[in-house]
Each structure stands twice: as C-alpha cells, then as structure tokens.
Amino acid sequence: LMKRHFARAAFVYAALAMVFGVFYREFTKFSGFTGQTTLSVMHPHYFLLGMVFCLVMLIAEQLFSFMPAGKGGKILALYHVGLNVTCLGLFLRGLAQVQGMALSRGLDASLSGIAGIGHALLGIAMLWMLWRLYRAVDGAKARTM
View 1 (cartoon, rainbow, N blue to C red):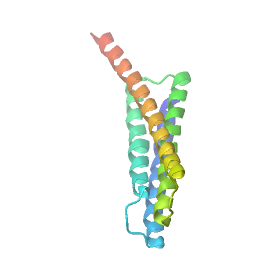
View 2 (tube, one colour):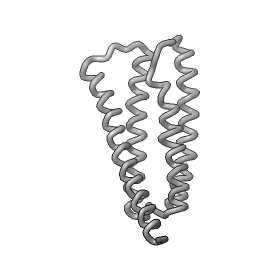
View 3 (cartoon, rainbow, N blue to C red):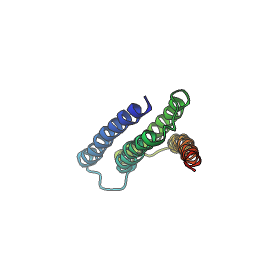
View 4 (cartoon, rainbow, N blue to C red):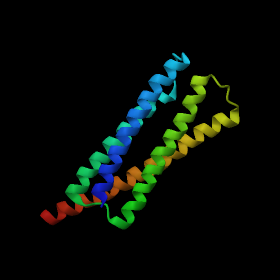
C-alpha cells in the first residue's frame, strides 16, 4: 500500500513540476517579465521534494518496510500538505511579483507565513519519515548481527 502511494505521488509531483515549469516560462514571457520570481523555484521544489523524495522513499520502503499503513498515512498526508502549502505560498508570491503588485506589509507577511508554515510541516514530516527509516535500518542491522 505504501509503495503504491509513493509511486503514485512521485508521478503526480513529476507532472506538477512540469506544469509549473511551463507555466513559469510562458507566464513570465507573456507578461514581459524578466526579473527574479519565486515561480522559478516551484519546478525544482516539486521535482526534488516531490518526485525524487517519493522515489527514494519508495526504494527505502521496498527494502525496509518502514511505513506502517496506519501511521504511515498520517505522515504522508502531513508531507503532502506541507509541500503543497509551501508551493501555494511560492505561487501566490510569484504571481504578485510578475504582475508588479505592491504588497501591503500584512499581505507580504501572510505570503511569507503561508510558505513558512508549509516548510515547517514539510520539515516535520520529512524528519518523521527519515526517523522511521533510521529505526527500521537500525533494527534490520541488529537482526543480522
């Protein structure tokens, strides 16, 4: 079950990475925008933190079965929420940058807060998964001695 979830998530994140890579290129070109924008980092966020991380976890799950179905689903849900909330913050800020919108201090702080909360959730879920993997590897090592 977890292996299928990791494989499906890797596929979805690869597709999202491609969509946002094309969106960034075409939207900035259409808008005549040539500066820096956070839209440019959505593509690598979805590729690395989405697709690549899920593929690595798929391999790790195949080797160590470290994600039990019950608790594993909660960890994965937290990971997905964290990654997508992070990208939502990047997307909204990027749209404002390309459109040249002057952000109030409150709106600017809100966009930073959205991305920050997403990063925090993502970090917690990532460390939780890696801790479970570490424990599984450590347990496998102890059984082989």
